View 1 (cartoon, rainbow, N blue to C red):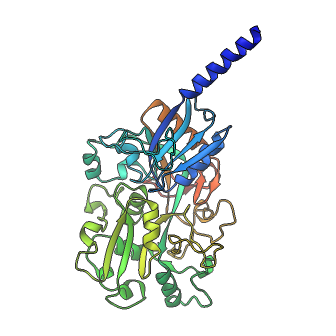
View 2: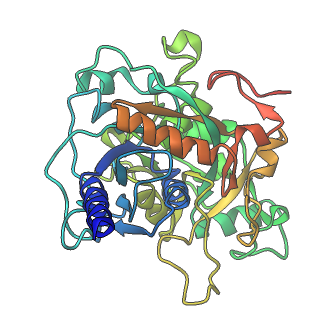
View 3: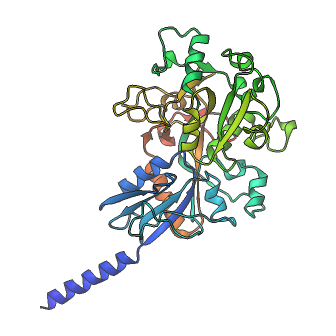
Length: 403
């Protein structure tokens, strides 16, 4: 009988402790969000359940039936990555708030919390790479210091199906079509061409797609599918193509301003060029999947569908990757683990950055460190652990070197 009382007391204690387990709320980068789910699922020694908001897939959570391994007192992590990388800082250290999947609700797929603070998150690039205006909007006089994560994210230039086949034809890639995704069939855009397209300056790229890319005719519309300025993908694009971070002190250092929707939106009166901005990666994928000529940047964890996909081609997966300066990152093979990282790790392709992490609370720091530790040892779609790569960056403003 004594044993029964002891066992019952222990069980009650365990249940009470589990009931008090905390949910950690994280914001930030959407580019690597699928990999957060994978890392947390592997950290759950019990049953892991993923909830995704039915109205916005950028809001999701992973709930574990026990506390996550190595994260005492935490059994759920709820993410809101709809605003992009910089929200890891603005909703924790800054004055912004946001809503998150409510894992305690009867139906977490439809329920959201009240507006609240986050506890940090991941960024695709350093917080200092974001515009000073975004810092001011968040009530911050300076960017909080972020720490280098142990993994890096590869990015690529993606184009609409119509632009993909037009570029193939213009570049003499015979025997290739919209479903020809091999590196041999991928057309190429130069870094200088893309810079001209996405810079704010009113130039030939805004007026004549044929003059800049050799396809279509003058007056045909070219749409840039970009992310909002708080997006890490957008900050990475600005850094790589426009020298925005390195040249952050002005044009004398080579910095170029990015074209945005405020200047070149649908109502700009310019029929040959438009900028469409979206909060999340899904918005950019949808924009790039539309008919017509469109171009933008995506992280390489995203992959397109063939038109012959079993079950049908998904509406936001019709776009295709192109080479940059003749070098491909996307390898066209979804069946292989760790796809689209080989050329970056070999130092042949340099549009990648070391991800950053930021924890604003003790629990937030513990969770981002635990996810980081998992992702630092893996080779996932478009993401590689830095220890697995011969190519290195001392910082995100450094050129690629080799060890």
